[in-house]
Amino acid sequence: MALPDYSMRQLLEAGVHFGHQTHRWNPKMAPFIFGSRNNIHILDLAQTVPLLHTALKAVSDTVARGGRVLFVGTKRQASDIIADAAQRSAQYYVNARWLGGMLTNWKTISNSIQRLRKLDEMLSGEAHGFTKKERLTLQRERDKLDRALGGIKDMGGVPDMIFIIDTNKEAIAIEEAKRLHIPVVAVIDSNCNPNPIDFPIPGNDDAARAITLYCDLIAKACLDGIGRQAGAMGVDIGAMEEAPAEALDEVAMPDQSAPETESDVAAEATSAAEPEVQPAA
Image 1: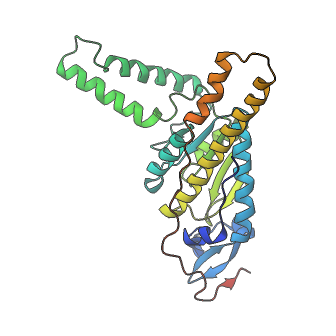
Image 2 (image 1 turned 90 degrees about the vertical axis):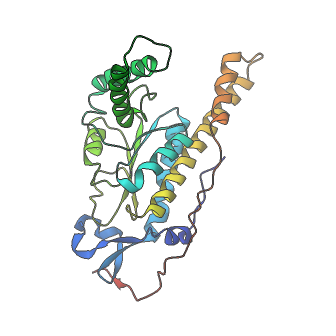
């Protein structure tokens, strides 16, 4: 496998270059802004293309070393896309609400995850003795925990990298990641502060088509990392006279959970040529 391919045309068609209204901008984003049109900032895709490649390589390298990537996007238009991309790439996600301490207070979060697992067992149908009202109460508690923690219940510890859509909305997640020295990959729109982000991707963080494109590329980078990890294990195992069955199973696992999917990001092309863009001062 290799890092996923993409083109500037794909970015244009997904509307990645559209920022926010000029009066809403964050001055720290000035280096990434090409100009403005109709009082809307236009992000410089000539910078987005290489920075996106750098971010994808960082994600792939992290997964290839056995690391875990946490996808974070709790805004309405990103929620389902984030969950789908993380599940497709055998990673983890938070798409409902970021609970304070999800990274910095992992012990407490782990206790809640254990409670979720216990509720799953209690409601699996094997356990009896609950009244209809008791079962309904337990089901509601289980559903609430699953919405908050379902995407990380199998993570087993803090992640090695986080990928974020909308750095303003997920400011607490970024703050916790920085405290724990966890690298952050994030899409930065014209109203964002790029300084805390280790691997910034200048682009629109509101359009569903753009979010789908980012998540699809990050998911494929994760799959590339899984493939590289499996390949490295294969080389090591191949050097042995007799490969242990356990090792062969470990190599086979990524292949079973790494389907290649194409995200249909090419639709009606956004007209980037009209009218004339005013260069940023």
